[in-house]
Length: 275
Image (cartoon, rainbow, N blue to C red):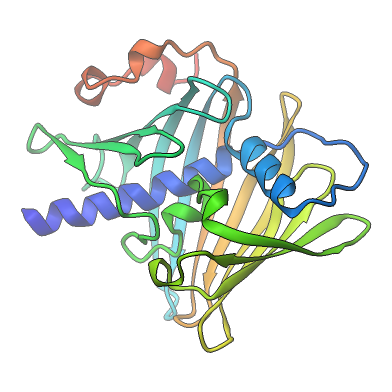
């Protein structure tokens, strides 16, 4: 049972991260070029995870290994900002595959501190608290990491603006604590008009690029340019994970009361249906 719980935990963490990425929205910014790397990162982090007051999205994740074998994950995510750039509530309700259907993952993001996480396993009618420290954890063959999309602390890295083109900022970021991560540095290509990171490449200690994140499709949703498809590639293993989003809505008026332990066992059906 312990292994099963761990596998599901990893799956949900990764899926949640991917969902956050796909729900991210990026309001159009001023055309005047920014020159401070830390300010670019701060604004990109803010607009990436706090679009609107709340949000809902349906996610479909396709994982393809180096032999072409595929796995799918499907879930709905609800998000509520308690304060812009600050505390945030999120719940993920899984519907597919059958072995995780009914499972719910709840997260309370707390910038500057460890997030709180709970996992509900319907087969056991068990609510399990999940410890922090999974920042760079993959899940059941997925190439997404928690930090890819859900908020690596901007203060964790030293950022340098390497180039400003007509359309993008190119940033070099190096971890302050090299022993806490597997990468030596990463390069980000951030769209100037939206502050959306269009591509991120991670380089290992040997100087080779081994992971790549690319945004594949964007559309305007309620005034927010929104990522509808993104891909993470593990260049060493030869695997990829594609996340597609639909049914995205912002500013639904989600009540704070649905982000509770009660909703783990009794999901808020009205809001999951988007009505």
